[in-house]
Image 1 (cartoon, rainbow, N blue to C red):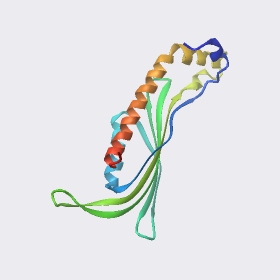
Image 2: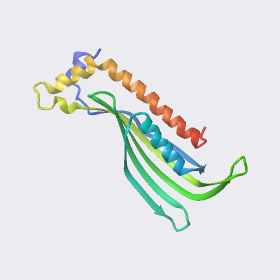
Image 3: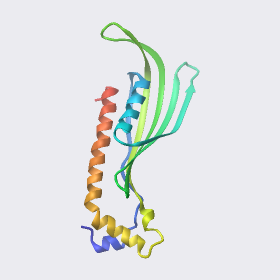
Image 4: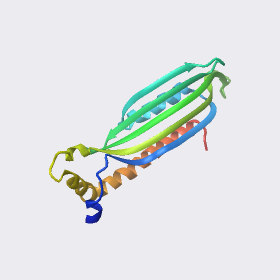
Length: 175
């Protein structure tokens, strides 16, 4: 349980960072469309509100393509807490043809991908604004009344996002 001193001298924060700047980087041959779709499906399947805030595609003089993507995916955990995952990716690819084990040929991409992730719990602290003792009431709510729930959310969401990272590394054959 939070101490009274902790409650009295703490500022109510809207965001609680959980992951900052986590990177997945690979250089290999893979199907970018398939990776993109599987990541998108994963977030939708897990109940996230998925938004692509940036998609920039540039054809390079050497025939390769550079793509920049920025996603924001959020999942409401209750009326007060939302889990947010932000992903920025820079991908430099050129087309490649791969022979599959059954001797079939498949068009894929060869190049590099670098993804950076941040994840945080976003709290609806605006419910306390403009109310007498609002800041203090919000701190009591978070530090005493729902402290265990916030800890459980954090643990569950870290497990969920780490599963996502494992699936990406597996797809890109990163050990």
